Length: 181
Length: 140
Image (cartoon, rainbow over all chains, first blue to last red; front, top):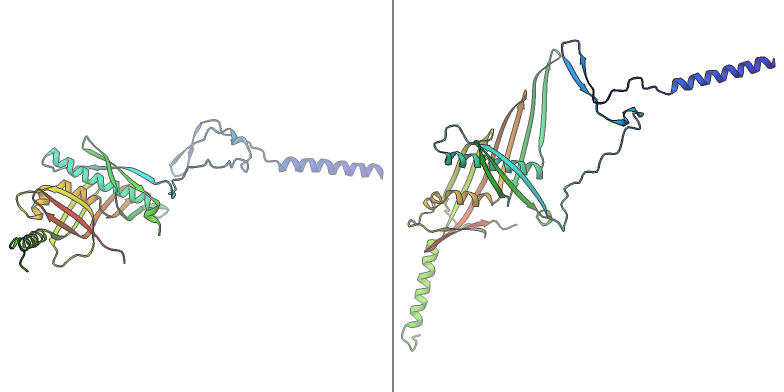
């Protein structure tokens, strides 16, 4: 009787040890550092996968979530005005009569682009997307973005014109009093 | 009442009235609207509309542009003569921006419209310069 009890207890201990071994997940495949792999998909499409060089990749997935680096946000405060700077680009039309006209027209286009960029930064962009899928294939993919804003007191800082491309650097100073109600 | 120096004060008053009325006659109010369209980063259309105001505008003169006077006291001719300076002045006022981008199958079409809504400007013609002031609408 005593021997049977000892045997049962030994069997129980070995069973527990086996269960613990199963519970600890083994990372069987650790991706090599900076190695690119090509995965072949049945319908002749290839997906290139590149693994990042991360020492923490050997760690448990739950422990890999490291905190995001703190980003400095541009926040408008009472004491400090916020300066927003953008560079707009414009191209001259093909049928221009002189280089001066080309410059003037390209500058106008670049100014409009700079205004749009300022509006995008200050007010934000409305984004709308639509995908049409037919027979498991993307037939049409459309993304619409729109901006609508009123901009005042924007200044042109610098204008450059090179190889038919005009670049306008524009700046706007936002102060707290402009938005205070 | 007749003064001791004769009609001196009366003449002075009359001259002042004539001067003020002539200045008032030279000053005018104009309604201006401006719009330009840029398609795919190329200027597509630009229009500047100027019209003399039929009735008196309400508002306070805010931002001023001073241009050298020309022989003709015609505002439209003056603006066409100093077109770039005037457009730069307009850009400093509040402009409405409407932009739409459409990306279809990785092909982008962008349209940006910049608008100056019809705004009243006060124009003062002087001997050597012309003063253009944007009339700012008073808040309700």
